[in-house]
Amino acid sequence: MKVFGHPWIDTEQFYVIQNRQDIVKTPSNSMLKIEKFHIELMRYCYQNSLRYMVNVESIKEAIFANLLGAKYIKASKHLAKELMPIAQNYLFDSQILGVISTDEEIEELAKANVDGVWFR
Image (cartoon, one colour):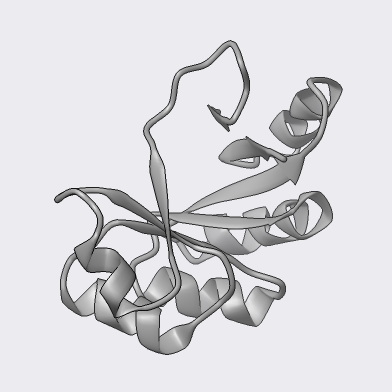
């Protein structure tokens, strides 16, 4: 299980982008973070082999994010638990991250086989 945003664990830096111009301002080989599902920006990242994470709010958005090469798909805890069987069944390349607030929630998502957690 991957853990992002916990004070005990060092993780790579994510660069928030909202448009193509923001990408130019990031170091090469950066992990980009798309805060809100943005199909054109995701297509651009996919076509240019850029690593990125995207927030999703539905199963449909997660399916498209996977098809467009998202490294990580971040979702609410509830949605992440719904997505895992779908991701496993369809062999998603993307990893599913559930958003949590406390250490106690790690165990809940681990039992649901979620790939990782993202602390608020």
